[in-house]
Amino acid sequence: MELLGGLGMFLLGMNMLSNGLKLGAGPTLERILANATRTPARAVWAGILITVIVQSSNAVTVAAIGFVNAGVLSLSAALFVLFGANIGTTTTGWMVALAGLKFNFASIALPVIALGVGAQVIRKNRPTGYFGEGLAGIGLLFYGIMMMQSGFNGLSEGWELPYSEGWAGAFVQLVIGVVMTVIMQSSSASTVIAISAAQAGMIDTSGAAALVIGANVGTTVTAVLAMIGGTPNAKRVASAHVFLRVVAAVVGFLLLPVLMWIIHILGHWFGFEESVATTLALFNTMFNIFAVLLLWPFVNVLTKRLGKWFVPAEDEAAAKPIYLDQTTLPVPSLAASALAMEVARIVSMAWSYVACTINSDSNTSGRRRDLYSLLRSSQEFVDEMSRSTMDEVTSDRLTSLLRVLRYLENVVELVYETLRLPLGLLKSDMLKERYDAYVSALDTLMQKYHDPGLGRSKENNRKLMAGFEQAYQDLKSTLLRGGAVGHWRVEDMELALQRISSQRRAVKQMVKAERWLRTAERASPVSSEETDQAGEQNGSNDDGEDQGQTAAPTAHS
Image (cartoon, rainbow, N blue to C red; front, top):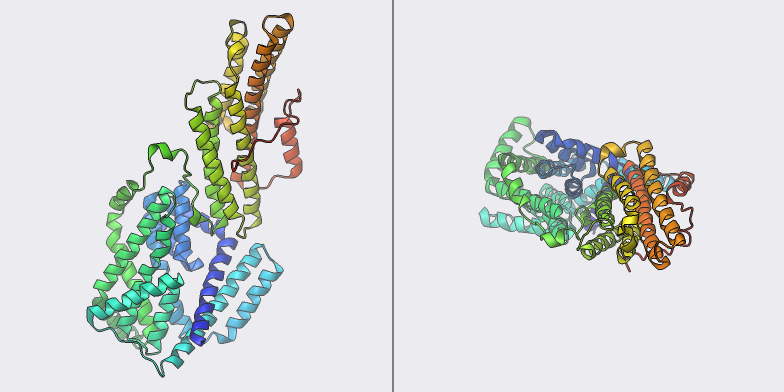
């Protein structure tokens, strides 16, 4: 029971440490990873550093998926980050060897837990509270290690695990390591068990080494699960993770006798040959480093091969999210970044849909269907995000993105309404000059959002919007004047007014969506007063057309 209780404390501590640091230092870790694209060596060190900090190679894999999706990391850079994660995850073994089994942390583990929990209670949902959770996790982790060590020492008096004999015996230990890791979902826990069992004399060093190799393979189950229903980039990165782990395992297993001999020589030189824990920790690090050195020259080939996998069919690509992936949900700031990228993509597609109201496009129903599919996927992703704890900045960012999604829902319905109304009178010779000026102003406004140079100046934004508004009012006045003097039927005039009114409202909803998207990208909250003022400036309608507007149905409907 002491062994099992220690294992439970270790797993709980690992989970708290990982969650606390991901919430408290998520943006910082993201910046470290985002700066890893300059050189392969820098990417490897970034992978090592982040894995050492959060003690979770799966978290690094998730981050790599998110950044590849967002276009911040190339696939080849992500591979080097995974190289680093493979090496960084071996630090758990060193932690056990140099701390948990060599030094007695019993005197400080409980105070560390108390301090961490205290910080979490006092500063809940604040960075200090998140770091407090991580600190409590460290205390639980070390306390769990000590309990497992004590449990194995007591268990060894009456029990003995079968020693591995030859390649067959080593392979059995490898399979045991795989099964243990699949069950516990933690290669670190399996590594600690292997080292603790070897330290207690329940298993020989070679058998424990084979078990450690199996733990490295078993951790790929999470990546395999991430491939189910994931984005193409998520599947590519997860496949690379599985491939790297399997290659490392094969290298470690085939070179097991050689590596153990090298470690024996090093132990004789440096005086740690009697420490089973140190021997196993060094073995775990060495075979992962050898695997990285072996695969390093083939990264470009592997990248090209992965780039050809998981390519969606052309007719499905537009309706499926590119950036949203379930594996990013454990890191709220990263999930928000993925959502922002996807929403930006939907905004671009929505502008193209708005353009259908002035350009002839026979596939308007297909565009509408694709937009609704993406909006539904985004809202479902938000629902998943809302179930996890997130910091205030991420929460504000998510609020801005929800506003964008709401405006986009309105746009889809307004464009659909516009397209149902006939051009009719608007194409007449008497309105040609006014209508052409209106269409030209609308075209200029839409181009602005595809030209970063025009979009940098608020003054340009106001001028373009004012130009579009003036063109709309001129066209509307001409329509009303013509109807008053009998140039055209009042019924035709009403249809024309309804069409340009719906079109104009769609454009204004898009402008609001763009503004809130920029707010989300800056990750800075907007005050209610500023929001109300902006809404009055950009969303008002002096003719009362928008007043009492019925809310468009949500994407869920």
